[in-house]
Length: 312
Figure 1 (spheres, rainbow, N blue to C red):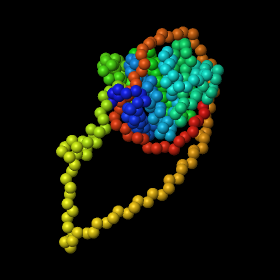
Figure 2: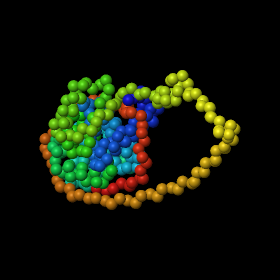
Figure 3: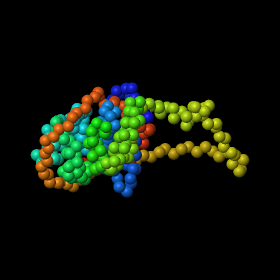
Figure 4: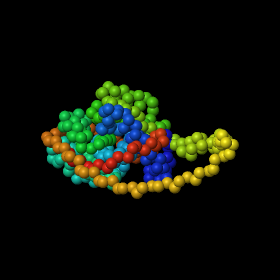
């Protein structure tokens, strides 16, 4: 686990991306028979870096050739739009109220295969919105149109939104910032998610110390234990004369043909009905999210053919 003291896009960018790919590989092997498609990313308290982890995970999914939709579900403190550098004319509330379709509200990001559904400011009573039948139908339709749907939710100890969404998603991951979150807060978060029937699949450690890969390389290749392995002498042949050294044949690499672009996938559609509420919730404040995320060393997922965006 690595605490990278560089900027998000600095010299530690490679390690961070590899860590995100490792997380994606672990998600793919969570349940082979029933693959995970909808993912909730949350935290115990603010400023643990959950939004940054959500963005990294979506970028790893998109670069692997799968389509992914990132949904802004932290309705009281929206940060994803500015992170992604995108602007949407419509958002989640407009889709659920039937004013616009999901297809018109979802926008593309700078990363191919990655899309974003923002939320309007000052949405009344977000907890009731996520618990509505309309949102459950929308999430089901999105999971059919995209390979993955990632929901960035508010902290569990601040609002109940993440607990409600955890019950609907296939997997829930809790982001924990090292030397920042107390053990009691993590335990209370786990208990709250468990009581609502949330599918807690694991934790993601953030802002943790990073061990350079040079250490492991030198350990396994002899620099830590006194140098390289001793040279092994070849035994003479049965005739008593050594066999002549054979020159290796030159490798022949055939030309690599370009892959054909995949055809557009079939589109799915769903009907929209109205939704409204008059009550409001409070808000929480805090500094910027963590700018480093740590996982175990990277294991790049198997390359997939690029798939085009599907409509809702």
